[in-house]
Length: 214
Ligand code: GRF
Image 1 (cartoon, rainbow, N blue to C red):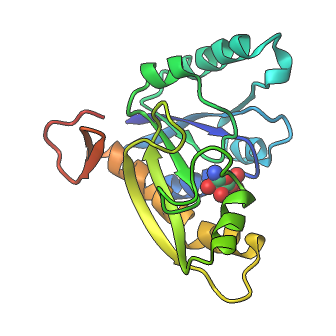
Image 2 (image 1 turned 45 degrees about the horizontal axis):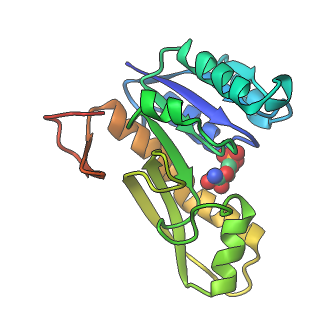
Image 3 (image 1 turned 120 degrees about the vertical axis):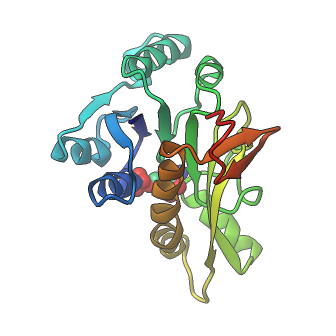
């Protein structure tokens, strides 16, 4: 049984998609041990509570400096001995020590087709603003492992979404969530939980069970 810790900062609709997929059996062999938020007001914490999952807030404001926060975050996460850490709209830079300790065991959902509209500064609505500004016709979402770079880790799953005439960043954000994020995040977790994701030389191979590195 894959033990998951989900890290969130906001509304938690991706968290909800994972909770639902576990309860309806689209994700097997996995359970959420805890939800951790840096934001005390995150609605995601309420969602955790509603489903009997431990919800913990650990805010940088509680600590003297970033280093102390990073240490506390790692300690909190590690107290659940997770097999997988899921960043579902977590607006915190993951400390390098955590990336090293959980190599290929941290995944993130990004609301574009990486390597477009990703990297520093591309988060939340800014991603969709960038898409509309550039005028691309297809966008989407990506689930990837987290490495030391910003949105540079091995890609697990991607799903395209059409940009439509008259889209605003908000409308597009919603469509990307509905048509892509809420599908591929649970799918990726299910693949990992069932030993179907291997990482070799910075790329993932999906569907092979032998030589599992994850
Ligand atoms: C999603 O668009 C996710 O891709 C991004 O932050 C948003 C989180 O939404 N990184 P929610 O909290 O899951 O509703």
